Image (cartoon, rainbow, N blue to C red; front, side, top):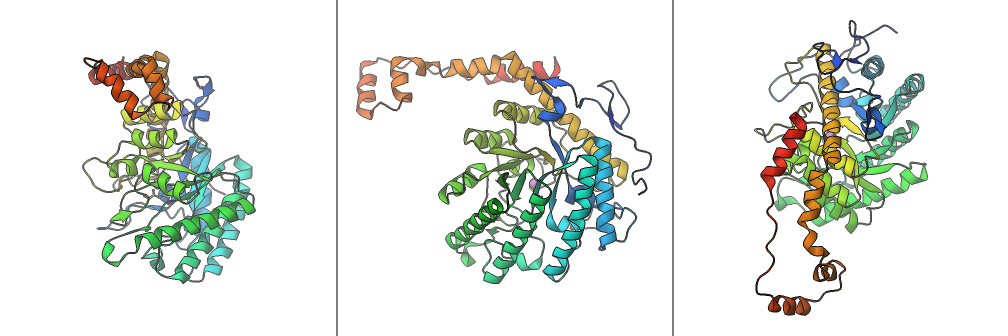
Length: 438
Ligand code: XUL
Ligand code: CO
């Protein structure tokens, strides 16, 4: 098999002073941060669909990049060329994981049985490559949003037969995930939502989605899948309203339907901001509920109202993300670059530079978050802020032993309440800056 990305050698760490675009400036895989090598803190993954599939097509124009990898698109030869390209790419970057949708791997046929036979063939080939290289699978998923049959949703569809097709796709995607030894299985609710309530039975749709997830868990456990199922929340796009709006909504849904023991969150940065939240907000909500599982590491554009899936370069965001991840004790999943090059960045060199940017940004985020934790001033401030609850009356409240009457009587004895602390936001932001740039 001949080299695909000619002229690009293994990407190495050269340090912050390096001007070589094909070297890491901050990602130093073996460097120890808080007692662990960077690569263990940051299990990075390549998204099959963006990196090997997306070639620049948007609503207004066709492909700008050539992702044929030397084989005609829409053929099994091309599917294999994508595997070759993907593994060469990951090896050159030191990326240890990949994520996939079923139909990212092979061209979808009209007959599902043909698609499944193609999936069997390609997954044998992928497995061979995995054994050869040590590259692993982070998570798999089923694409239940591109095929026209899913126009009204998959789990939320009005057609019982379409629902069966969704079940069949999930079953196959779970088979593949188990075959690859994947750490997780994702449900991103592509078209699980609605455009207008005038034509929608929301309760019916949500109950059916829950049933599908229950069946997926039962089947997965039966075939030996021991990893986590994930919901990847997103508030809108493609639907006007998506049911898994944000982490809080998805967690409530999982608890309502008794799915919370098997599921965690896969938090995508760009989805968080579309929901009107910060990335770190979504991570915190997941973490305090014991459901921070995995991350789709990308970045949106605050001026645009859609999912731009850019490679992350905002070091503030990456730092605040890694601050949440470190405090939560790490991820059971990993960091999937659900990101694509900008349409005019159309060469294969750009593919590498996108990943180098993203990996360096998260390496910086990791080091800066570790420094924030070691510095300790943020933690100390938060601890002090709530210290009023260390008093006898405070302890009575937090132990759950207080009544409203008792607290009202306590307040009546006081002339005035002890004032709350200054929030000191500006001081804390200055600390963040001094750690980032000092
Ligand atoms: C779409 C998105 C998906 C999921 C997997 O916004 O993020 O690619 O990550 O289906
Ligand atoms: Co995603």
